[in-house]
Image 1: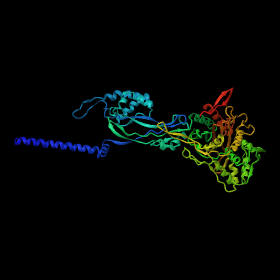
Image 2 (image 1 turned 90 degrees about the horizontal axis):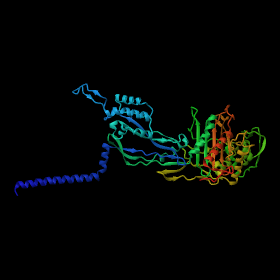
Image 3 (image 1 turned 90 degrees about the vertical axis):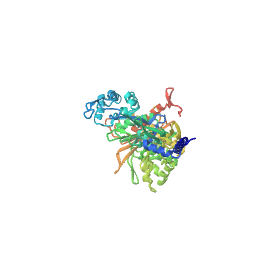
Image 4 (image 1 turned 180 degrees about the vertical axis):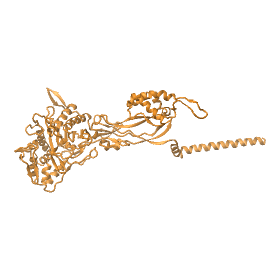
Length: 625
């Protein structure tokens, strides 16, 4: 073999070795990149041509007890346009300078051919401008070299979005925004299908993150909001697209105890007298006495313009209850066997002074009444004379009894800012305070707490904490059922409950004395369709200078059907005004709140189907669970 041939082989061998080494180097580098250096290069890639973005979850829904949507997040859409997008040329023009001087640049046929159809589609679907106005708006933005013009001032719904996407020019923008200059923004908007129904209880959302501000939306915000996913934003086909790396976890759904149909009944019945008598505010709560579930919570407050809206959740704000507290005070004394329904007491037309406190009756009479009659006629003097004397000057014993009964519960509520009961702690021997407390002063309860106590009287003695949320769901799977919270299995003796129910019956059905009974032909709380038992209440409004005997807070709390109680309802109206053009001219607890509860009871029983026709009479049928 000659020397030239050997050199050729050697050169080929060297070249082959170089190629093999290069191949092995590349192979090793590939292996290193895919193993040890993969995270580094993935990060570098993301930094160079990608942006890691958070993928927002869908906020959880809020339902009523029947599965009807009370609050939900739905997509809304906004369309804007870049009239100077690279795919859209200017209108025909002649070049005036340079070597191409005099040359005519043709018009962009895609833009000019579709401008009219785009304007017509926007006018027809969105409807806030005419076709000519949309056309002029787009052309003006183009002439002013503006790169951003909003075509839909307000967001549009999915149906409007679908109709617009039927336009070929608009649909083409989904493929490449540079071809049309059209860009869609998708937003999640919180909506309530039932409008303002129970709006203060369900709550509201706000700010850029859409977090809950009031009601259940705020209380359960951390569960409703869900968890963000991870996405990567890339420029594909002339537009930014998000590629999902980690799916977001949608928020938890909340099933409330509210019944939207009963809520509608309660709000409508409350609104009529509140508006008619120009009250400051009104509140109404309907509760299932066997489960503690709140079926309706209505709050109407007068705003600055004189309209009534749900601006404050009065159902969870404490206030002096007035005479509705007489039931509780008498029940405590009955349970302690300090008095009986037949305990006599003399009442007078004239004010009666006990130590440094003067007591006055609205229903003035000079008579000797039993305690059963005292509750029916709602005598302040009768209560102030008997209860303090029954406890022998030991003020603390009476308050301790209320505490043992569970009147001041220690459980929290599902509504932010919900207040707890307050009972003024009297000094030893301070029976003057007790003499006012027994008919609803120096003590503060919320409407929800009052309906809880009367509900316990109705169900036989079980004091059940009011419930507003029934269960939590994740993707239609129940993840938590809210248990019934019993404060006292038997908050007072069955004998005391039996006695107090007799007295509450007389309030509505004793036509001679009952403050919610038949009055001058006016039904008040009496109903031929459903028997109601309960108690009226009237409290003078407290001002900085003392109590104002010209302005009152009226109320009625009762349960029904009296024979087999299912529901308890409370109605409170703050400062109703005298109306000369209405009959009766003034509104009191029986004619106002008692009548509201009566109408709610009748419609509730009709809605729930608890009554059946039998032999020409309405009879209570077995409760449907």
